[in-house]
Image 1 (spheres, rainbow, N blue to C red):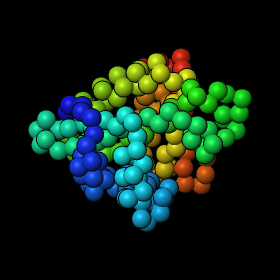
Image 2 (cartoon, helix red, strand yellow; image 1 turned 135 degrees about the vertical axis):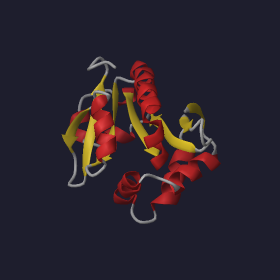
Image 3 (cartoon, rainbow, N blue to C red; image 1 turned 120 degrees about the vertical axis):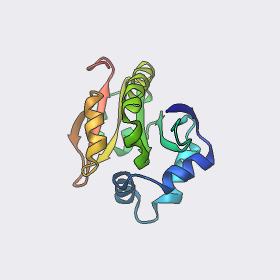
Image 4 (cartoon, rainbow, N blue to C red; image 1 turned 90 degrees about the vertical axis):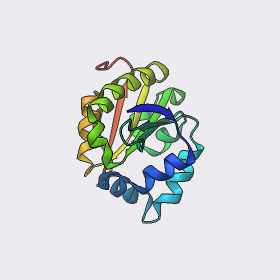
Length: 165
């Protein structure tokens, strides 16, 4: 798998071919009509990366970080009280089922990407749907911690210097 900058076609392909767990998470967060909402949010992100399968040449996953106060306003606000919000990065990742054939490569590159993000942000965070077991497992593997957030979602985070990967 190799990394490249996202195109609108790559984003559309991944959204149209999401893993069931990612689709359920987006539906729980944004409702039944999640696709155009999420597409616009991703297109608006400055730094969206795509992982392309070397074998099939299909987009397999996309990820990025949103460096704004949004996580502090929306996610687990008690966690952010008294913290400088400009150092917060809201990390995210969405993938197709083809990630299963590229998992080892994905895991190696995920650690490298986390190291890059950890240099830029004091806190990395977001939320994950409780039913998205695959995402929860790799987030734990990357050293992120979890807190209850809502009935359906858990808040995850990592502060700079904690369990460096």
